[in-house]
Amino acid sequence: MPSKTYRPRSPSTLPRVTGVLAVGAALSLGLAACGSDPTPASDADGVSVVTTTTQLGNIVDEIVACGGGVNTTILPIGADPHDFSPSSADVATMVQANVVISNGLGLEAGLTDALASAAEDGAEVVAIAALVDPIPFGEENHSDEDHSDEDHADEDHADEEHSDEEHGHSDGLDPHFWFDMTRMAQAAVIIGDTLAATGDSAYADCGQQVSAEILTAQTELEQILSVVPESRRVLVTDHDAMEYFAAAYDFTVAGSVIPAGTTLAEPSSADLQALVEVMKSAGVTAIFANAAQPAALADAVAAEVGADVVVVSLFIESLGEPGSEAGTYTTMMLTNAERIADALRN
Image 1 (cartoon, rainbow, N blue to C red):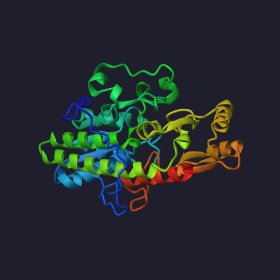
Image 2: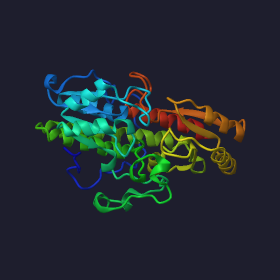
Image 3: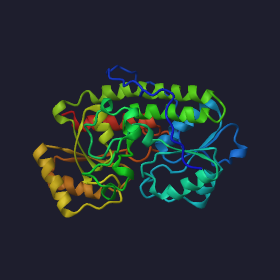
Image 4: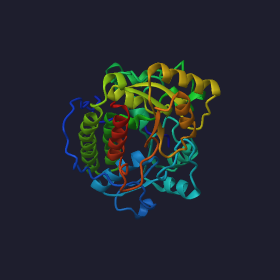
């Protein structure tokens, strides 16, 4: 069975929370940690879901906790989705599921065959990134208002300046949508509606509830970032992963240590020297690197630019350990915002 092309119940996107509101530090969103034990669909009390990434897995965990059933997240904490290969047990778990939620747009390249097998065996396979108005690589100034859901139904997203081979992702589109909390809130609604279609309408309400919690957390994130002056809202990252963040929260991406959307690419010496020159010219003093990956290249670039450049670890491709400061999707985003603000506020 082919993957389902899904549209949210409302054709309009969720409203963007733009006000910077004071949200108490004790805000408790109750988003459960990822990674439940594999359970065959026949043994689950309710729908059986398999999710690929830890960020989406956390959202699905919360929706399933609300509506019933079980979710299994395939990628472990700290895994890089770009080069993860599933075990035979992972594949079996996916094949047994009622619904499989993936990120899509080539993020989980090693899961392509397993996702196809799950679809062929009757699972509902939904790739979320393609359903939340994805942007081409290099489009950090992309405007949501310029690209409605209706426009994207027939629009060619090919990015002529950033080929599929260069970025390693489908159609030249950026799969890292979770760095825009509005899009992740929309994803929660999509997931809730998808699970509701299995026969229990309560999942749709659960998706709406989780979506609202994400948007509430977004107001706190915006408040955290408000201390960064406009002149300092410039990001240099270890690979092209934060353009959604830049577009949503008024930053600019000046460059990346690995000038590609996957951690598997290798920069040339010319690429690294060009980034050094860009950072010197723009006065950039921080490189934001993936906490789960070695930072040797970022450290080398920082040393070349100057002693005042720091390398700051962010949770980019995975959540942190359960119970940690990045153990849920919302706490991951707030922790990242705090680290960005601390590095750039002065």
